[in-house]
Image (cartoon, rainbow, N blue to C red; front, side):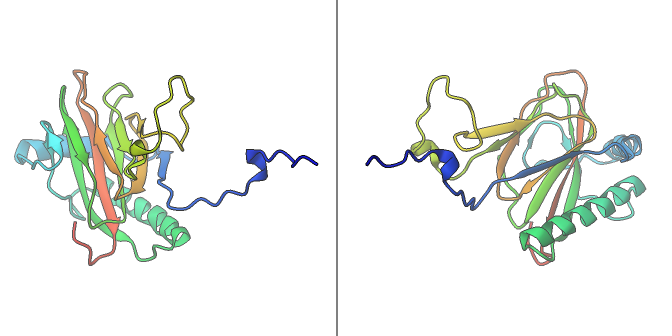
Length: 204
């Protein structure tokens, strides 16, 4: 007697070591107040350069520097604490937060955020054609999964994925995920907040 044909729906799938990008669109953050604070800060401070090629990146923003950012951090801390509990990463706290301003042709090179558990970006003033954030796979799968012409792209066979910038968009991800940001090719500045959450003793 022939064996029953076993299809993929007959298989039980245990998913381990997932790479997840959590996302949300926030309409109630006071992005106008944060943008106003950003422009004033830029006029007084030359900023720093870490992963940004061109553009302007602030030093770490501290509590009390901007009430609208403080409100955003309080909201985000609640969200990440809830997420941390579900993932078994209890104790994650805010480590650092900074502002990015990317004029035309500026971008961010591939990097991750060592010393943190969660990292993320929130767009203060951005349009969807101003340069996507790109997440790269880092498990060496490119040496095993052959490219197949016209094959459908899935979360299993992809080597990278990307998300658009848009005012109010929030992306949250594991700090070990390699990512970079495409150049802004418009004449309008792209403004965002980046941040790290982790254990308070972590170095970042």
